[in-house]
Image (cartoon, rainbow, N blue to C red; front, side, top):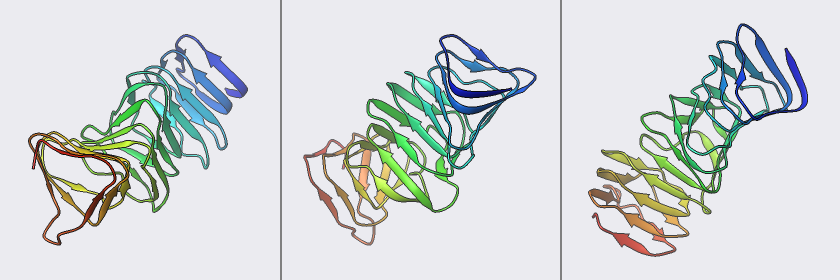
Length: 219
């Protein structure tokens, strides 16, 4: 089955025993489920406002965009071309996610990596954070361009982490352990070192330039 133009549902979209190919824009207002496959083909858009439990989501065509538009959602582990969040709430990785294009964390949303990663498959593309990126594992790798100055990046693991050398908007540490700079680092906004964490400039004594308030309840 193939959709063209704009296709919107207010309830559950179930794909079972078949493949649904999107050749336009699908907006799923309810859950996207079933044992079949949804293919988001090149140049097209898939907006998902609720849970995503479909067995197979194929979204790696160059280019296509998948946006999680609801409140609290789990991001299905698969390979995406462009992946974005919008709406509100926390979007939590349900497994390792691979990006072939760009990753965008929208205003009002938090992308929580949990115990997983969201790396680009090869160097290139843009990582944009207008909301909050909560890194509980490693900072998203292989993005050549970082647009972070309008958002917040939190290194939130319950253990040691490496802080990517880049320019942040707001930078915070939480959880526990030592967060060690990988290189010279800047923030255009505040730096907050959370309780139970240590921000280490490393043995190389890397610089950190803070454009806003510096708050430390940790060390």
